[in-house]
Image (cartoon, rainbow over all chains, first blue to last red; front, side):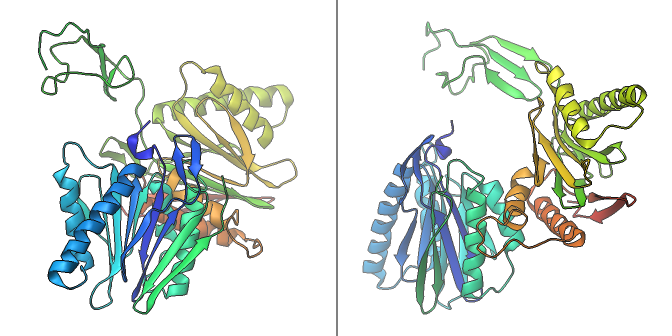
Length: 204
Length: 256
């Protein structure tokens, strides 16, 4: 039993042409028992920025609150939205502060920067982060998700095509993982706003 | 953490595959010592090595396509860039195996011998479902010291339809329309679920031709080669069609 697969999760974020999408499953389990089918793992921290948190559920919620707190402080002091790159660095620092007793989460940051260009990054549980142009994945079925994204991703997808790619990648990946699934949610962020859709998938 | 503690630490078993404490569960020990001076360590030779690689197969109405990469590796080293993972058991049947090469080689020898004996006794070569059962029996024969081989059997059945059988290391098998095995299995199977099994799609299931299926497999291996370090170099693709000679092609992947 690994701590990172105690609750189960699957999160993918992908970049399109002037848009980003982030998709996550809805399952909350306690090892093999499913406890909730509407557990939120993606959080809209700002109008054009989402943070996805995969891993131990208690740390998902704690880190969300911590991040909300720190981002609110930033907004009060600097009177501007936090750019995605800065959110990435903040998360990285917050996680490394707990280097020898970490939060068991592997976050994903997905958003549009000031020029509405896509920003994607993912991190390990102690804050080592990696930026990507195409897609990032996190959760209990990363092998499955990498395979699907590698196959279905193309550069410069428009929001509808991005939604299809994300939805198919997520659903097919979680169907081969016992710890994730039970529905899905996709958010597509464009300069005009956020489109959120729930996915119909296998409920097992 | 005092060195004078009375609790006895479980012995450590060290092998070429890594070190494991004999008793499962968290072990309380001096963080600097790692148990080296305070517990017995048993050194053990591990009879298995993982030589990597991915195999996949897809069955159609009158054809079957089987593909395997040609990389042989051990740890982080590449031992060979052009070893085959495919083996023709009969003219109608190909065995694709990944795992430990020496076990795979031995398994192929045993299957060849048993196939020849069958041929002598029955005056005909084995049909694909028979090979499938024989492979399962051969694997289960070594239930308590298994062949470290992850097998896929691809062939044409008695009616000329494509058949794919996938196995675990001790002989449990199932016939299906498509399958993948080996180190890149996780990267390939969800894609085949989506494109061949038409899962999570509301559009009607398309009829795929051999050429389209070969292209799908090439794409799947390209993707597995990107993300899996044990998969790469080349992909060997064999197509078995009813009443046609066996076609074999090599497709280059990244050599990194």
